Image 1: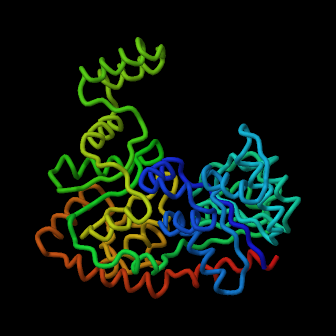
Image 2: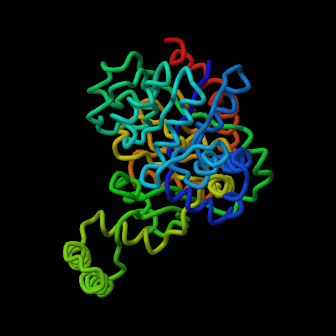
Amino acid sequence: MRVFFLWYYYPWYLRSYYRGHAAAASLPFAEHRRRLLDDHFWWPADLAAHMAGRGYETEFVVGNAEALQKKWASENGVRFTEENWEREIIVEQVKRFAPDAVWVASHFEYFGPFLRQIRKHTGRVILWVGEPWPAPPDVDGISVLITENPGTFKSVQHKFDRVLVTKPAFDPGILRALGPVEKRYDATVVGQFTKVHRRRAALAAHLLRHGVDLRLFGLVAEDTVDSALGGVRLAAWHLLRRGRPREAASALKRALRPTPDQRNLDLIARRISPPVYGMDMHRVLAASRVTLNVHGDIAGSYAGNMRMFEATGVGACLLTEHSDNLESLFAPGREVLTYRTADDLLETLRRVKAGDIDADGIARAGQRRTLREHTMERLLNDIAPAFRL
């Protein structure tokens, strides 16, 4: 079975990676890709490597990694246009690999005509979507949906030949690459604060306002203002320097009449450290005594995001929201800590700080559970039916 992984990495991660690894762009394609994937940014690359050791032939492509993809094209004599290099190179890679299945990430820009073009060169297209985003208008040509949440694309699930619900997995090779890591942070939050992470922002801001020693690493994906005067200045900049009256009006409104959500984001923006990705992110998690996990707002009451397995896998004590299915993943109170409300979360962290909760023991138990059950082999067993249609 030949499986072609077509993944789309966050552009801000790629920019961060190449700032720290400028020499990678000059390397031959194979070495360049190996170094990028060794950063362990996302579990699918680790799964592809695991599958290769289980008899599958796999090819892993980061479709939007421009320097990497153009290196492949150069080495293989493939011509492309600058306006459409990403898709033209991907199509040629699929043709040459001739896969039995193409597994694509949830980058909806690939859906529709482009996926139908790819479908001409493979037996089936498999789709990964983690959370229950609104269904795109065009899922034609996709045979299998794999997801961590049974509510994903609920309205169009009948269009797929098969829907498989599973969870991401942790690669213990990350631990070997990390080596010993000293605990430096009492509590952390690692992640984005966007319009689909309002709960995360509200909880983090609640903790900050109550004096919790909380370290934040990530992005605030909206304009923020640090004061009414700062908002006026931002509005003037949008209007006078950029010629964008709509953005100016928005900044002025945020400064003079901020909503509770905006107040949360403004506070977080003043306290947040730059985002960390790949192995840098794993180091921060490993250095955290406790790390807070808050699923995206669209996840509802169903747990299973990758952060749960990354955090426990590297030995942090995971503090995650109560959810309907959590007990199928970890034992609450023994392998992870949980909360139901903002005040419950605050009280739990205070008890950890006072030594009333053995966070280190819970972290060790959670790590044992992840390394025993939340493995690439388990994930491969879960998704094997996708390749047997």
